[in-house]
Figure (cartoon, rainbow, N blue to C red):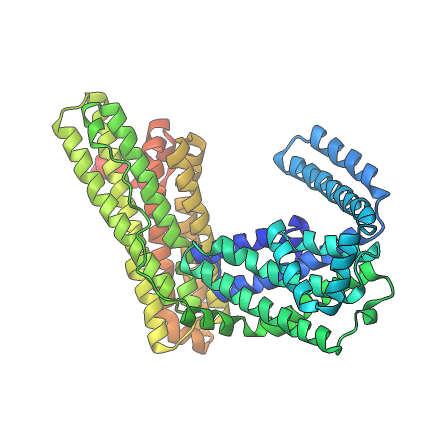
Length: 501
């Protein structure tokens, strides 16, 4: 709700939530719950915008522009933009009201409004179409409320239009997400079913006379806005407990198609092999794509420990196949490049690229093979981590994911400071893993039943996540060696002792 209020768009929250569902950061039913809350937040925004706050417009504009022009950070500029945007929304709402006033004297519009009083179902359909055309149920509801406030439409007609706008609001993410991956479509279908069912129920109450808009206040415009809030509050209360069932129904109804492989176009250009610097740049881009795929399977893997999801496991397997393919093709590409003969200055670079590719492939195996197997074992044995245990694992996983993002930055920019930080993170994660292992052993000593059941899986999960982090950290070693920052790391110390021996 808060996200939708800040963005003034439940559709934007729907797209973000669907993206989280696709990545595995949120289960589809959790993303659906996020969307239901966003719809209520958007409805509350409609009430705020419909209040008599026109006097705030000049102050908001001046305040927003002042913040934007004097901002020294990106965050401050964004705050300025938000305040300016809020003022512009208030201006546009006033323009809608001003434009609607003369329409009331138009005989054609009067005839249409009179017709709708006897055909609320048609008004409902028009409301859905207008919300779809505007691609914003919020904008549509504010327009209908402005019509009602100026007397252009009777209260029942405005109510039917608002209820229709709620159906249209469900159609928008459904259409936008239909070509997305399956988890996103499940969210969109579940939302449309819930929103459509609520809209039809409200329409039935309105047409049958069970519901009277006058119950929501004396002012027609406020009636429309309050109805919008009431519909979304009721939808959240009824559909939130059923979000899991809605997603399962959508999953059963949606035909399964063969999953597409994620990575299909290689960055390894064979025509570049005759020009070593260009070929090395191609290989470096392929490393980045490998790392992106590793990050894409690292993010959702912990979801499998909270509840087994065959779709997430299948997508992880597909991406792991891509990682293996890119690893093999990169080694072959580097081998062919070395066969062609390269300048001595670039010889070390080829070895570094091959080593980083090996490390990324190792990270992919630890995630897609070992971690997924542990999660599957938990599902088969019907056991679960203790509350403290899963909290520790989630926190540790979050740290590894953050370091994965840092590894992507190193591969993208070659930034020495980022490489230095990533090398330091490897040692910090090693120490953190030891602390969490000790904490787990203390829970075992206290006789926690859940900890006893899952002790081996818990410890193996920590160990594997540490190994994934170490493999990702390796992308920083070539840069850290050049700058001398690797000298303070544990690995450098081990190397030094080995050389001395």
